[in-house]
Length: 234
Image 1 (cartoon, rainbow, N blue to C red):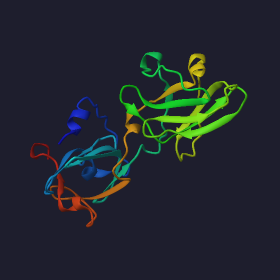
Image 2 (cartoon, one colour; image 1 turned 120 degrees about the vertical axis):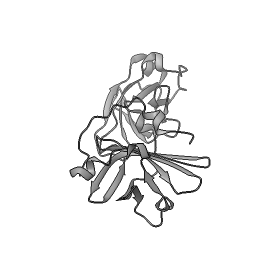
Image 3 (cartoon, rainbow, N blue to C red; image 1 turned 60 degrees about the horizontal axis):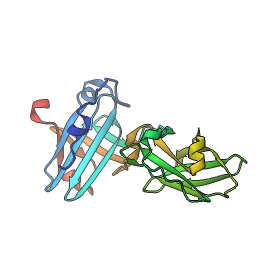
Image 4 (cartoon, rainbow, N blue to C red; image 1 turned 90 degrees about the horizontal axis):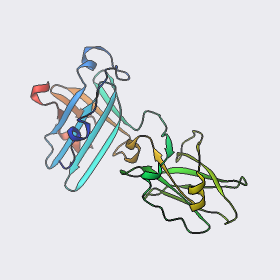
């Protein structure tokens, strides 16, 4: 595979907490690293962590997909729920030494850049721009992380409110430093880089069977295979 969970998670420390909905010896034996077997030309890995979260990756030809979130078990039914467990992203201003773009935005345009320093942009963040006069404008960050609005040259940017697009949570408000306001350009970092990644699915059901886990959906190509732990870890 081009990307491996082992490489991404080599430094992760796992803290034991019972997974949501998990109970009994069967549930406690589920955490571990699984590899997909029996599906031609497809590589897939699943890591069930003891803290009730998971990491999943799939590689097929030139296509790579991933998902992360929480796992739950009820009897022999195991469900992967992608996302961030109902949490909302938190933001901060980029430090000046993290800013790679120093050129001011053009007159009449305010630009908010959203992402994670040196990793990449974050799309789908609703940004509320507020001027000193109280005038506001809203834009959503696109694939390159930019959220752009037009404001009269007479206005001065004082703060920005950020939240995930579609969220019902309140805005997280951050003051825009005078130099950033002067340049009409400010950058905002999301606290957790996992928010940069999209998810291949919202929910995936599996069945606990002898030898591992099977996708519980006959129409899913992965159901032809079996997610199994390496023999030395079973």
